[in-house]
Length: 111
Image (cartoon, rainbow, N blue to C red):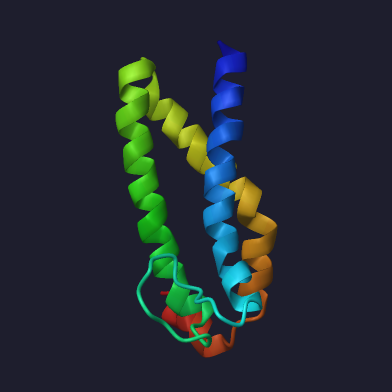
């Protein structure tokens, strides 16, 4: 069963990391917006402005996963918890790098 879980995590992490990398893709594209949704936004949307959108999209994705895993696995809560930990591990270095580039005022506004 461990192989099934490992495969599940690998597959789902691809979607989550793609969601995370949309900000960088949008920032590097001259015609795109860092917004995850199709709402109009300017190229100068900051990471701080974009972050809540990422978390909203991630929450939606995790709700779908929780519904699906509850129908397939007995220990679905543990599976989702491990997925969240693996997701944070996956994006940790990039997240820290983005935080280092923020101004002090932006960091304070996180709280």
